[in-house]
Image 1: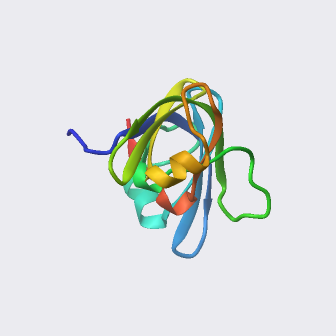
Image 2: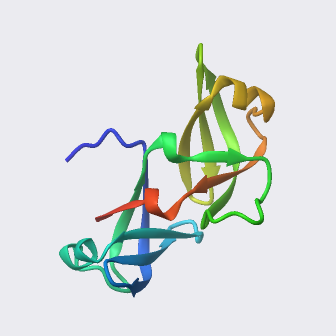
Length: 139
């Protein structure tokens, strides 16, 4: 199956914490960084997820926010440090490719935000992704 999602990060489940309806799933990405996904308990069961399961973390580029440093006092669980690899500016939007340990993320942000943050290749950034915006697929 081919998907339009640009961000497909391979990793391994390290922990599953079930709740009443939802579960948090910790994934160790191939580059060694940790990512948290909040998915339904039904999805955990349907995918057969457990520690050691190989997965792909899927994130729409519009759900990847960027900051110029770590952000404290925020509920966003996933803060992946990286380096800007490329910035493509459009009339209203910008596409920013970010190299994170062993992977590349694409972020779609406004052109104005890219300018305000002074994003350019080589700039250090932190990719921010809410755990509820991370989907998982079995590899």
